[in-house]
Image (cartoon, rainbow, N blue to C red):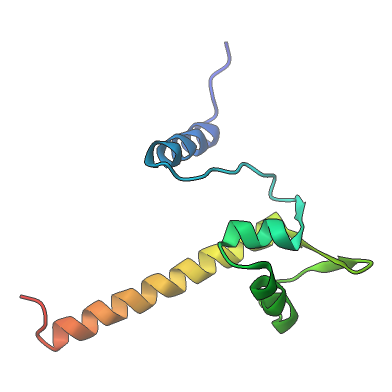
Length: 104
């Protein structure tokens, strides 16, 4: 029996932890192309909101006729960027409140 590569074991561990919390889990290839609805579902936003962000240039996409397609890797990168921004904003709020003496 072959050993499980460490990256695969870590990914499986994250999937199992998410399932244990009751979170939804999706396993997709990063080079897969997603529809706007699939991408919106992964981001937890509405499809019209995603389309607006696409048109604003927030994520790269390509069109097939009238349909937009987004690489899964781009959606993941966008999600990580958004989460990092949210964390930075929370960290700033905590620091501001600590300076104002709102924490003991």
